[in-house]
Length: 237
Image (cartoon, rainbow, N blue to C red):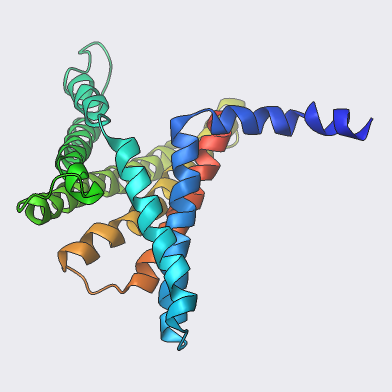
């Protein structure tokens, strides 16, 4: 039957695995949230009425709050990841640049999530806190630091891959295999770099470091979210 063919299709099973992960659901919510941010800005710029803008602006705010709640407690995960990166086994060849940027990235994200969680009750309206705005600014600052560490790591990785590729003899069988491996690693690094640069627009705009408007931030966030959806989809395959 057609119903059976749909229900038992491998893509459906893959989708269920994807949405069963917190990361998968978060990336989907994030995609809608940032698209809503972009579209609300677009409607304002094209003389849209308040009644047209309000649903998209409300969607952006509600999804932002929902994702904030889902992030509570996630800082522990990043503190642990930072400790693991810092305690990298001496028996493993770990490039010091990648090691330090990994520690910086994880500590940046951990601090960001810690300050972000501190503002949850204020955001929910349960208990107003005068320091909420200051804490949110600190959260954005650490988020930017974490992303910048990732940008440095990906840029350095691409540089090292170029060096490795220059030493490969593509005339030999092993050289061909190594060349393909480098191409895959480069593609993954480039994709992550694009995602990081898109994500960097949000905290830099919020802190006033760069004057990106809501439209640009929303569009950049949508792109990075879709990259996140794609990456998580591959992981759950």
